[in-house]
Length: 202
Ligand code: GAR
Image 1: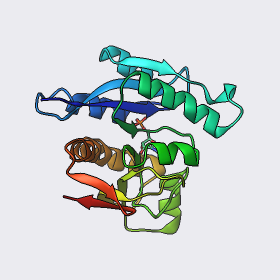
Image 2: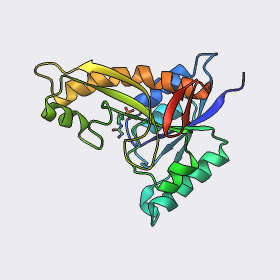
Image 3: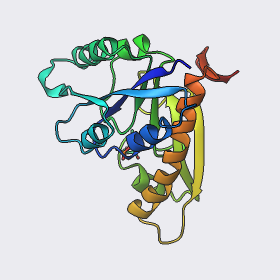
Image 4: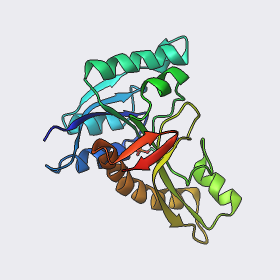
């Protein structure tokens, strides 16, 4: 079975990266984690990758004069590693339109809310402040706008009385670790495609 080569883009802890690495250990999983790119030298997720024997690359956004120049450097690393799909997992940079277009239908992101609610940062506090009874997580195809794009999978969790941003985040994170490997599998198998601005299940 030929497996799709996946790059995971991170900026921090790497728990979603770990869940993807773990899922890809199954012999019938249709993707392999071939590269991890971080924009931060000190991202804890880099160690997660090294422990799993995955090639890592640090590309700091700070040394580039524009979003697109940074994105072109990432693109070059992806091409060099013969990457077929990109999975962003806590990668906290906004992409250029050029990158979104170049990787259209081949780049996924996970966000810890039921998009289109609560994009951006301080997501769990946004959910608590809004008083919603449910929140959750979304895996979506990447488009140029931040935390937006056709939904591949979502999972909901209850918001409980007395929740803090931390307790809600922890409940949602468990669902992230479940649906991200599932969504990546569907895309790698060609069972979900971006078509006409929607995620179409075939
Ligand atoms: C995850 O909760 C992910 O959904 C979120 O960052 C966290 C990264 O954790 N991503 C975003 O907010 C993207 N807008 P991790 O490094 O342990 O996977």
